Image (cartoon, rainbow, N blue to C red; front, side, top):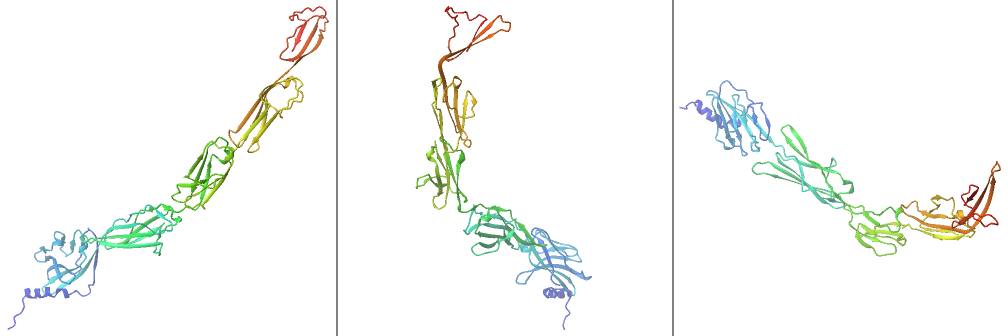
Length: 467
């Protein structure tokens, strides 16, 4: 006689076939959780009145179940299965919501809530997705400099500890860098830590720079997925020194070319517009075909007027790239004839010449006894009043400090010349006799009475002398 299966037998049978029994109308349900947070999975089933117990399991990749939590509806007790990876991490509430603390990447599974009655088993599957925000991307292994027309590694953009893996994008001045053969080469790789299952993404950028990249910022970003969708993290800017060859050479002169005079020191400076700038040049002096190798400066000391000419400099390894400048060493010569102290007789002629030789037109000024003369002195017949101190001074106004002067001290000598005049007082009581004497050196004057030879006392009030 066939025996009727009891409740316990029916229950075992139900558990065996539970994986194939789903509540009609329930599809896939996904719970997104951040790495390290608590995963909360509602059972999503209406609790039947005749519920015996609820149970949670997850499925292995081969489909076999692993039970992890049990709650009896009658005894109100909760039991957790001995699964090492979930030890002390599970919590099952009265409404059969399962919580898993400290979410890990390994928690990405298909979990199933099972509610068991005497007659049936109801299941509701939940897919768990775990997301880990990566570290802020950083540009590392940066090139110390980039060179124009050379494909060179700029650096690596690295972002660590991401799940799932993300994508890295490079930017130049805020614009996306797309791969371009021979100009932009991107090499992406990712590595997963076997313990944490987190990804590290690295993107290497090889780049051919141009002069337009001077002071241009380069950045990179990582695009990743979080519980709420797609997100992006941006790196700090990186600016690179751009090396480029010299395209032009210039030559500078100190002091200013318009102010160089004999006796000065001249410093020539040669500059190239490359980066880094050239450190050595060839300097070519007037009349010397062979260049003098020097740093970017070359100094000539105590120059003379014969140093006037064209000066050049060029690159050492590219002599055709050359710069030149014309230098004039200014000079000023003054010759005064006669000069010094000159003694002449009254009435003599005295030609005076002040001859100027200069690198450009010079101004000439004559002074007599510190008073400026309107014209140069000319003596066809010397007078006593022509005597004095004469100075011929010349200067180049454009050249500071270039000034010359010579002096002439003129002495005019002559025999004394006498002229007498007399005045009668209106009262008629006295007369004044005036003796005008001209001569150099200063003559001595003596008064006598005609015919007597007597010397008259010069202190007499009726006698006057004038020199």
